[in-house]
Image (cartoon, rainbow over all chains, first blue to last red; front, side, top):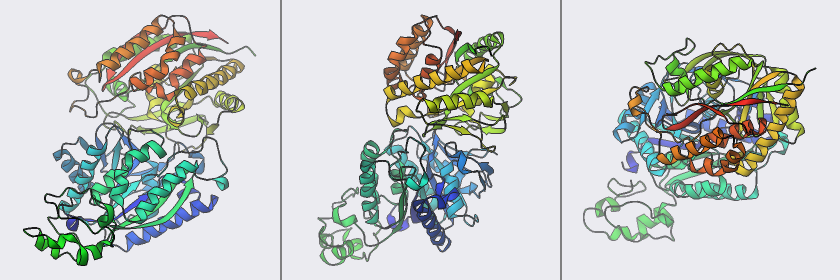
Length: 342
Length: 295
């Protein structure tokens, strides 16, 4: 699928621990994260999104990939770790039709996938927190997909592509969300929330590196760093750090995004950030990114110029001849179809 | 007050498939059959538990995974619906259980006094994890014995298996002290599988036993190694091998539950009784009983 057809109008990285929902006043950082959640809520409300699709690292699966398809799941949720912060009653609105289509396409692409539609199914803390904060009135239906504990890059990439195909086939305009911390190491003793801080300087440095990339819209670059991030800044509860693989393949595996870090703070030691990514014509893609899979070499990029400028004025791609040249010359910001940027 | 005693210890794994195949009235899905060798193994363990007449069952569940310390169920009664997040097609169970809160508080307090993070869970809306429910159901389907539920602190993920072993030994000491002071007859239970690599697909008929086998022969060899040591009463060697076993068999002993159990039983040298072994969706599961110990 070309980027111009991609139905994802925005992507968000959201943390899943319950403090910003349940105890936002316990720490200025929690409060700031709550403000950022509110900002995301307003952005989505003002968008023309039809659907929110969530990949939650806090919903592990074993049997392939599970997709929430209960139209109106309702429960009183309690986090198994932070149960003393209070209960979270919820009633959500799921897009069951989309969930079924997503599962079907995932199966068509070779994945083992199924929908779940059971009263009392334990929707994970991260998904509940995210939907309570960014979609409190259920104005937009959602779909949640699990994170298989064994899956690795290829499987997760296909899962993301299946989401994109489902969105395109359904005609829905989609907001893609990953529920995940950056560094995920919690403090190992009970802390006063006022003293909350990132667990270690090493975690902090890796978080800053991830934030630096995402501020530049380099989503695919972060995706390609996932294995390194897993080694350096993740407690290894699962095989690998997968959410950026899913998000990047869903949104279009490139770096052509406007990235905004709306908040970054620690929650019980973890690196918790609220980040928005919007498709953008100007981006880091043409500076250093060379990880697309073109069918035809399009020439050297002008890596010293902003991406738009490099294409419109200096790019060696303008000198192309043959079938690719017309589309390259016609580019006024968006990637043309057939550019091999899938 | 008399000194409490541990009347029995057991490894009692929690695949929800076993409850599913039992078709108890509490579980909504219905099965034709399935995993009989393990279910028959539980028949034996159940009889032993009845004969031992415990007043309390103290259990650690890998599926109440906590990342900051050990948590303990801290209300006298929990009732509700548990739906397995992994196998919701098999396990949707109406539970109704009682907790021995004073003993839970005593273990929690003793744990904290030994320098470990420990906390009581007193939120009435809390949903009991399916690991606790499955093991308790298979041991005591009448649910007429109160329990103490202990979370599995993810020490192995946060540090390493050596730290896990040390931590579980400390928790075991706290458990023993609290049980001794309680004056009660207690059964201690580790609710974990042995090798723990699952298949990631499921047959259309989950109880189709023509599809059930261990995920990999290497896992089977490791499981048999550990079981043989248990049969010979060589629990210390089980502990010594725990790191390699856990890593190489992807074992659920990473929860620390088996280490905690063996240390709570004072590293038994008497042979364990193997009630049975079987695979569930590729994982290796043994139902194992140890004699009680005086405290």
